[in-house]
Length: 136
Image (tube, rainbow, N blue to C red):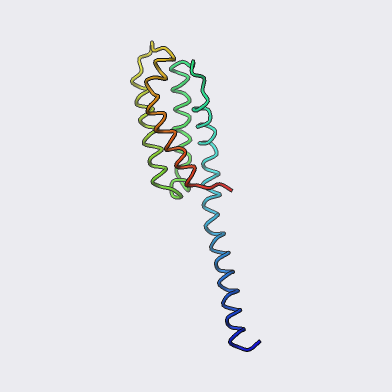
């Protein structure tokens, strides 16, 4: 191998190594974001699968759990996908506002009817966020 070929091989090897090192650096924030999102995923699953006959206080409690999980995931997860994270926080605040406006004597059906559209918007925002942050 002559000097020119050795330089080309060396440059290719260096570029491959640099790319691999850069890829690892890009993965680390995602791993941290996924750790931060683990409680959000659990809270969201509780929110999505909550019994349709739940009382107003039970629905509000699960919504508060989602809110707390969003606050906990505000570090790396927010920086990994700031627009999607902001959208989820905004749609969740609409769900909480709807829940605050539900009269205490509301039936489970009235509760679900009141929050249906807001909850659907939040579902899309959640799916958007999770689509933007690919967990290993």
